[in-house]
Image: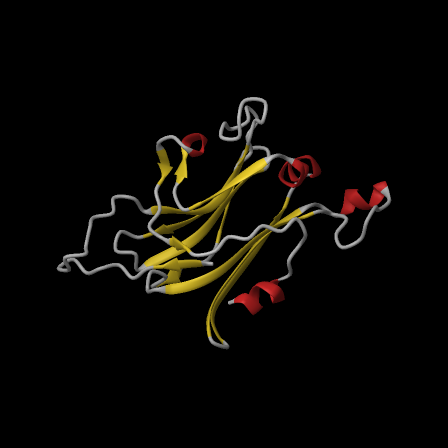
Length: 193
Protein backbone atom coordinates (compact mmCIF):
# COMPACT_ATOMS: atom_id res chain seq x y z
CA UNK A 1 0.00 0.00 0.00
CA UNK A 2 1.49 3.31 -1.12
CA UNK A 3 0.42 6.91 -0.54
CA UNK A 4 1.41 9.68 -2.96
CA UNK A 5 1.25 12.79 -0.75
CA UNK A 6 -0.04 16.07 -2.09
CA UNK A 7 2.84 18.39 -2.82
CA UNK A 8 2.83 21.71 -0.93
CA UNK A 9 2.43 24.83 -3.08
CA UNK A 10 5.43 27.05 -3.80
CA UNK A 11 4.28 29.67 -1.28
CA UNK A 12 3.76 27.14 1.53
CA UNK A 13 6.21 26.97 4.45
CA UNK A 14 6.15 23.16 3.96
CA UNK A 15 7.45 23.43 0.40
CA UNK A 16 10.90 22.11 -0.40
CA UNK A 17 12.54 21.73 -3.79
CA UNK A 18 12.71 18.19 -5.07
CA UNK A 19 15.47 17.93 -7.60
CA UNK A 20 14.60 14.31 -8.44
CA UNK A 21 11.84 13.30 -10.87
CA UNK A 22 12.17 9.54 -10.33
CA UNK A 23 10.92 8.30 -6.97
CA UNK A 24 11.62 4.78 -5.70
CA UNK A 25 8.65 2.75 -4.41
CA UNK A 26 9.82 -0.81 -3.76
CA UNK A 27 12.14 -3.47 -5.08
CA UNK A 28 14.57 -6.22 -4.24
CA UNK A 29 18.15 -7.24 -4.81
CA UNK A 30 19.79 -10.63 -4.86
CA UNK A 31 22.02 -10.92 -1.81
CA UNK A 32 25.27 -12.81 -1.27
CA UNK A 33 24.85 -14.76 1.97
CA UNK A 34 28.51 -15.86 1.80
CA UNK A 35 29.44 -12.23 2.56
CA UNK A 36 26.50 -10.95 4.64
CA UNK A 37 22.81 -10.16 4.28
CA UNK A 38 23.42 -6.62 2.98
CA UNK A 39 25.84 -7.15 0.11
CA UNK A 40 24.44 -7.43 -3.41
CA UNK A 41 25.32 -10.65 -5.17
CA UNK A 42 27.92 -10.35 -7.96
CA UNK A 43 25.18 -11.53 -10.36
CA UNK A 44 22.44 -9.34 -8.90
CA UNK A 45 19.31 -9.05 -11.06
CA UNK A 46 17.30 -6.40 -9.22
CA UNK A 47 13.64 -5.66 -9.61
CA UNK A 48 12.68 -2.01 -9.08
CA UNK A 49 9.36 -0.21 -9.06
CA UNK A 50 9.45 3.57 -9.26
CA UNK A 51 7.32 6.49 -10.34
CA UNK A 52 8.50 9.10 -12.82
CA UNK A 53 6.95 12.57 -12.63
CA UNK A 54 7.12 16.03 -14.12
CA UNK A 55 8.78 18.71 -11.97
CA UNK A 56 5.45 19.91 -10.55
CA UNK A 57 4.24 16.29 -10.06
CA UNK A 58 1.14 16.93 -12.21
CA UNK A 59 1.82 13.98 -14.52
CA UNK A 60 3.37 10.68 -13.43
CA UNK A 61 3.67 7.08 -14.52
CA UNK A 62 4.74 3.79 -12.93
CA UNK A 63 7.89 2.10 -14.21
CA UNK A 64 8.97 -1.45 -13.40
CA UNK A 65 12.58 -2.38 -14.14
CA UNK A 66 13.36 -6.07 -14.56
CA UNK A 67 16.49 -7.86 -15.75
CA UNK A 68 15.84 -10.08 -18.76
CA UNK A 69 19.08 -10.27 -20.75
CA UNK A 70 19.70 -6.62 -19.87
CA UNK A 71 17.55 -4.01 -18.18
CA UNK A 72 13.95 -3.80 -19.37
CA UNK A 73 11.66 -1.05 -18.17
CA UNK A 74 7.91 -1.57 -18.41
CA UNK A 75 5.75 1.53 -17.99
CA UNK A 76 2.14 2.44 -17.35
CA UNK A 77 0.22 5.18 -19.06
CA UNK A 78 0.44 8.70 -17.64
CA UNK A 79 -1.58 9.30 -14.47
CA UNK A 80 -2.65 12.92 -13.93
CA UNK A 81 -2.41 14.25 -10.37
CA UNK A 82 -1.09 11.04 -8.85
CA UNK A 83 0.42 13.14 -6.05
CA UNK A 84 -2.94 14.17 -4.59
CA UNK A 85 -2.96 12.10 -1.37
CA UNK A 86 -3.98 9.07 -3.41
CA UNK A 87 -3.62 5.60 -1.86
CA UNK A 88 -2.68 2.76 -4.20
CA UNK A 89 -2.49 -0.98 -3.65
CA UNK A 90 0.21 -2.48 -5.84
CA UNK A 91 1.09 -6.04 -6.74
CA UNK A 92 4.17 -7.29 -8.58
CA UNK A 93 4.04 -10.99 -9.38
CA UNK A 94 6.35 -13.45 -11.08
CA UNK A 95 4.28 -16.32 -12.39
CA UNK A 96 5.94 -19.67 -12.95
CA UNK A 97 4.96 -21.18 -16.32
CA UNK A 98 3.54 -24.19 -14.47
CA UNK A 99 1.07 -22.07 -12.44
CA UNK A 100 -1.56 -23.06 -11.30
CA UNK A 101 -0.60 -26.68 -11.91
CA UNK A 102 2.41 -28.61 -10.66
CA UNK A 103 4.83 -30.36 -12.94
CA UNK A 104 4.11 -30.10 -16.63
CA UNK A 105 5.54 -32.01 -19.58
CA UNK A 106 8.85 -30.50 -20.75
CA UNK A 107 7.24 -29.50 -24.07
CA UNK A 108 4.67 -27.38 -22.18
CA UNK A 109 7.38 -24.95 -21.04
CA UNK A 110 8.42 -24.21 -24.61
CA UNK A 111 4.99 -22.70 -25.28
CA UNK A 112 4.26 -21.01 -21.96
CA UNK A 113 6.78 -18.40 -20.86
CA UNK A 114 7.21 -17.16 -17.29
CA UNK A 115 5.49 -13.84 -16.74
CA UNK A 116 6.00 -10.81 -14.54
CA UNK A 117 2.78 -8.92 -13.78
CA UNK A 118 2.22 -5.44 -12.41
CA UNK A 119 -1.20 -4.48 -11.07
CA UNK A 120 -2.15 -1.28 -9.23
CA UNK A 121 -5.49 -0.01 -8.03
CA UNK A 122 -6.56 3.31 -6.56
CA UNK A 123 -9.95 3.14 -4.79
CA UNK A 124 -11.87 4.73 -1.96
CA UNK A 125 -14.64 2.79 -0.25
CA UNK A 126 -16.12 0.73 -3.08
CA UNK A 127 -15.30 3.18 -5.87
CA UNK A 128 -12.41 2.32 -8.17
CA UNK A 129 -10.77 5.48 -9.51
CA UNK A 130 -7.83 3.96 -11.40
CA UNK A 131 -6.68 0.48 -12.33
CA UNK A 132 -3.43 -0.22 -14.14
CA UNK A 133 -1.88 -3.48 -15.26
CA UNK A 134 0.87 -4.62 -17.58
CA UNK A 135 2.98 -7.74 -17.94
CA UNK A 136 5.98 -9.17 -19.71
CA UNK A 137 6.90 -12.72 -20.69
CA UNK A 138 10.55 -13.57 -20.29
CA UNK A 139 12.91 -16.51 -20.58
CA UNK A 140 12.80 -19.40 -18.13
CA UNK A 141 16.34 -18.80 -16.81
CA UNK A 142 15.60 -15.18 -15.82
CA UNK A 143 12.35 -16.13 -14.10
CA UNK A 144 14.05 -18.83 -12.06
CA UNK A 145 16.43 -16.19 -10.72
CA UNK A 146 13.46 -14.13 -9.58
CA UNK A 147 11.64 -17.13 -8.15
CA UNK A 148 14.48 -19.03 -6.49
CA UNK A 149 17.16 -16.58 -5.33
CA UNK A 150 18.00 -15.23 -1.89
CA UNK A 151 16.62 -11.72 -2.04
CA UNK A 152 16.08 -8.78 0.26
CA UNK A 153 13.28 -6.29 -0.23
CA UNK A 154 13.38 -2.55 0.31
CA UNK A 155 10.61 0.03 0.42
CA UNK A 156 11.08 3.73 -0.27
CA UNK A 157 14.52 5.02 -1.18
CA UNK A 158 17.01 2.57 -2.67
CA UNK A 159 20.48 2.44 -1.11
CA UNK A 160 23.77 0.91 -2.19
CA UNK A 161 23.99 -2.52 -0.49
CA UNK A 162 20.92 -1.55 1.59
CA UNK A 163 22.86 0.57 4.10
CA UNK A 164 25.05 2.82 1.94
CA UNK A 165 24.43 6.03 0.06
CA UNK A 166 21.06 6.69 -1.56
CA UNK A 167 20.99 5.64 -5.21
CA UNK A 168 17.30 6.45 -5.86
CA UNK A 169 15.40 8.94 -3.70
CA UNK A 170 11.74 8.71 -2.73
CA UNK A 171 8.95 11.13 -1.85
CA UNK A 172 6.17 8.61 -1.31
CA UNK A 173 4.84 6.95 1.84
CA UNK A 174 4.84 3.16 1.93
CA UNK A 175 2.29 2.14 4.56
CA UNK A 176 2.38 -1.64 4.13
CA UNK A 177 4.52 -4.30 2.43
CA UNK A 178 3.56 -7.96 2.12
CA UNK A 179 5.41 -10.77 0.37
CA UNK A 180 3.78 -14.00 -0.74
CA UNK A 181 5.57 -16.92 -2.34
CA UNK A 182 2.40 -17.81 -4.25
CA UNK A 183 0.57 -15.98 -7.03
CA UNK A 184 -2.04 -13.49 -5.76
CA UNK A 185 -4.75 -12.68 -8.36
CA UNK A 186 -5.95 -9.13 -9.13
CA UNK A 187 -9.23 -9.78 -7.29
CA UNK A 188 -7.43 -10.28 -4.00
CA UNK A 189 -5.42 -7.09 -4.40
CA UNK A 190 -8.65 -5.27 -5.31
CA UNK A 191 -10.25 -6.46 -2.05
CA UNK A 192 -7.47 -4.75 -0.06
CA UNK A 193 -7.90 -1.41 -1.86
